[in-house]
Image 1 (tube, rainbow, N blue to C red):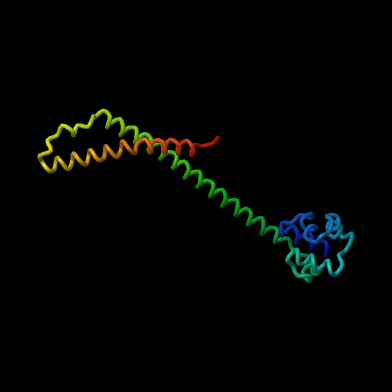
Image 2: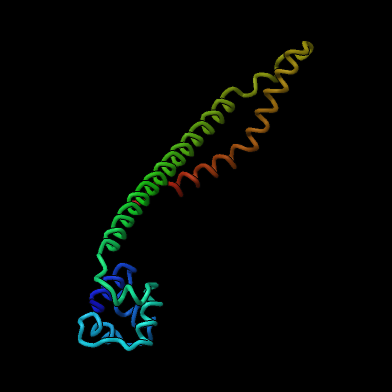
Length: 169
């Protein structure tokens, strides 16, 4: 009864014989002998075992412990595995979305830069005596000026980001 309870509770706590032996300051073979019923721990050691296994001495000495705790651990482990899998899938999906967003940002930046290069600032020849034309011309010039200054940084950052978020296979 004691030997089976020590073994069952040790396993339910996820401890190996070696780990329990280290906690009790004994050799692994001693724990093995207790679990095989070849020897019995003295009263002081029984108290140490109960503390190491976080189980009352009466439970160790009482009726056989049912291995449902092991089943509970397996159920919890299975649930954690499912949760970890879901988190990994979410992380992969976010990474993929970010990757394609950065690629789209590269393409859009290059396209706008090409359009601005080809158009050669047509607003420079406009008649600015009309206030509405003047405001539109200044707005377009401001956008072009800001874009030409920011585009290299945006493009560099997007290319580096797309490279870093690519799928590693």
